[in-house]
Amino acid sequence: MNIKLFLPAVLLSLFFQNSQAQTQKKQVQNYSLNTKNFVATGNWRGAFKIKPGIEVPFNFDITGKNADDLNLVFLNAEERFPGGHVNRKADSLFVKLDQFDNELAFKIEGDSLVGVLRKQDKSGRPLAVVAERGKNYRFKPSETDPAGNFTGTYDVVFKSQSGNDEKAVGVFKQIGNKITGTFLRVTGDSRYLEGTVEGNNFSLSSFIGSSPSYYKGTFSKDGTLTGEVVSARGNQPFTGTQNQNAKLPDAYKLTFLKDGYKTLDFSFPDVNGKKISLSDEKYKNKVVILTITGSWCPNCVDEASFIAPWYKENKKRGVEVIGIHYERQTDSAYVRKVLTRFREKFDIQYDQVIAGTPDKQLVAKSLPALSNFLSFPTTIIINKKGEVAQIHTGYSGPATGKYYTEFVKEFNQEIDELLKQ
Image 1 (cartoon, rainbow, N blue to C red):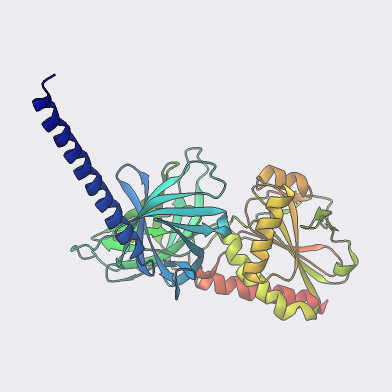
Image 2 (image 1 turned 45 degrees about the horizontal axis):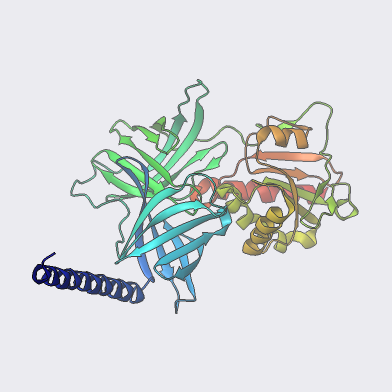
């Protein structure tokens, strides 16, 4: 080998290696600087990629005085729903969405966050999500004006391939291009939806930590609408007609006791293993409210936010409440975790028991006196004799406006009458 040719080649190779190392070091330093200077607080627009070409937008705020005291709040219409604590680790952000046993896991990329929504135990399939700082809009602003104001109440029918179509109610409020609303269904409402109207077309979305919701469709000048619910599992079409008097089937006549039964006979354990039953001395000669619920259920969250403070105000009148929980797992560690979180979040002072997993057939098996169980939550009111006085299927929460007000009024009237007996 010619030594005169070899030495320049070696020197050139060393030069390029050193240059490459310096470039990589500079990139690492710049990246570290970018992530070090990253500020999480502020308003954000997120978007889930549920299908190719389809994204579901949502908005959230991150607040806090320092990096160790950051909290995320989801924004939907007029609601601010607490998401959870934001934990910073190197170039990543993690948000434990304890209410639904989920987690947002983000990698910091400049002023953006790129990551996934996943179960806290990493099971199941994660859902891709991207978030950008400082964007206050939900759906991208349009230059197309709305074709009209479609504010109103609608009779809605959700179509089913099996032919078991479901009657529902749509409630919408529109100001300019912005539209908010909800859908009331027998099993509960879709909570706070927010979106936009472009011409005759509308889009609505919502996210509080469970699964993202996305509705899209078209209003017509004749007072009808068509649309579909879009999800990763598939789409469900719906149609509707404007009707200010629209209402659901009577929620007090959907689930009932089987012939020959006057009450419910059960004995379920609390988180400490103590068995609780309606026949316990604590509940004798009192009006008792049973709520069939689950910490994973958004409508159950709304019900708990009503029942928990209501109970604290009324327990001295001779009423009690038992939360009968059906959770995703029934092992003692998991049950203690989710029921304790639920209890602390709403300051629940009534008894909670675990009855099984959220399967309608299992509910029917564990509470054999019930017929036609349909929904979480279902609220059962027991009179002072220990007999079932009323069963209410589903829950119309505060997002439903007048329907929620009507439920609260009827609930209090029923309790007042039973306490007089």
